[in-house]
Image 1 (cartoon, one colour):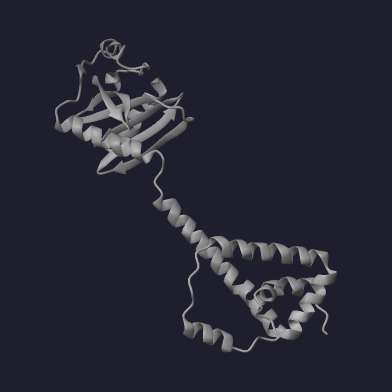
Image 2 (cartoon, rainbow, N blue to C red):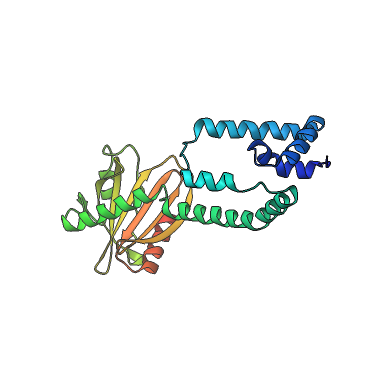
Length: 251
């Protein structure tokens, strides 16, 4: 009987448990397991894993032709098994790693960010405010008129600034709703462009300004001091980022 070392035994445990080895190799593995506690431990763990998979994973019966083909193939000798397993480790492991990485990337790209529903709904509210001609509930360029108007209508105090000196005059404010939360909406102008600023409290941590384009509109969003800011306009991206920076610094 040929002696089997631990390394080779580890390679053959799956085949041993699945009854894939020839009689001589099976006897060699059994002899080694009887005298090696480490290999016996691995044997028991693999056996438990196989039992768990059989108990919980869905079972699909193989076609009769496939079963006959598999069982009609003579068992591989021990040297062939070792060669096959070494080759599978060398070539299949990198392939599985690459596949896993590709699947992770697909899931990352396909899975929307938690912020995305806020941004999508804010863009819809921006469009509605322009189409329905309901841009402002209080129309004023005076921040001391707009800010007090929100008192009693919100359970927070939104920051209101007038950036007329920088070319972004305050136009007014209104109440809006994002994700079923009452939101302060401020409107600013830039030439013939309208900028909507949505402000509401959040329990999330601070997040830096991020820009993206949604349905043809430029969007800049960030979170600071437990407040969420979403700025939307058809204004050129660079100008909107300049305005957003002014607002962030002022807030």
